[in-house]
Image 1: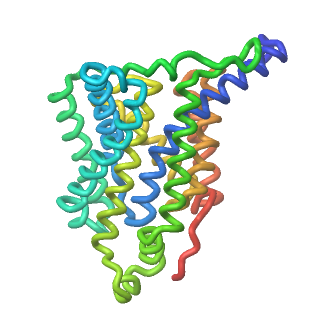
Image 2 (image 1 turned 30 degrees about the vertical axis):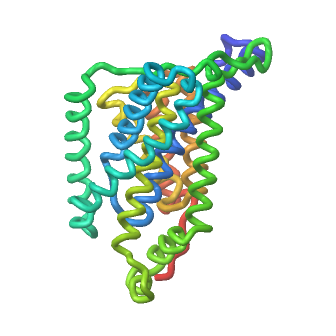
Length: 308
């Protein structure tokens, strides 16, 4: 497998695939952070999480077209507006879904899984009916075009660098919200002991709803980032949902640090193996390794310490 390449070529291949893995890692992190918040706090398996991501992608697509048609002078900055709108659009839909569906299914994980899976199918058909079945792409601003040469053999795309910076920034924001904000303290209190948290005055029902909305909003931001590196279609979210659940479970449910470490490990393994093997074989090998590790450590790489 490696004998056909020289050492310099192998070094360049690993560097390029490693950077491609970092871009994939960025999407995984943005997707998995929202899912980890929801699953760790509420125990809800949200099979429609990918569709919340795609809503953010479609919002970005329409904002791109709007700025191109009516505000061409501000077009280079449209993505920042689109990212904010994507967060609020996906978050608002998340609040509505929690109020109308999820709150009636707490402590019924199988029913929640089936309900959100059905919701994902409904949203896919809605996107197909409203936006069409074909994939669409956004126009990338000029400052995101091109690549930066690192060596004679290695170049890294600027839009990929931007997506990675965005993933790091969102991760830091989620960390600050979780460990420095009033909402984060309430979330951690409910995780420790829901009954006692309610007894001391925390509105657990509203905290759950807000948590679900924030998790879906982060998925919307992931959708905005996704438009920078790929096209958007009604079923694009389903391409990432399995890998995202794998990241959350492998990292440890509810652990932000575990989610980031798991996303990095899985994305790098898949990216490098996909160059030398087929994409499906790379996924199979990655899954086998993860399953093997989970058999030894079922709680994942990192686990939260809870009072029993």
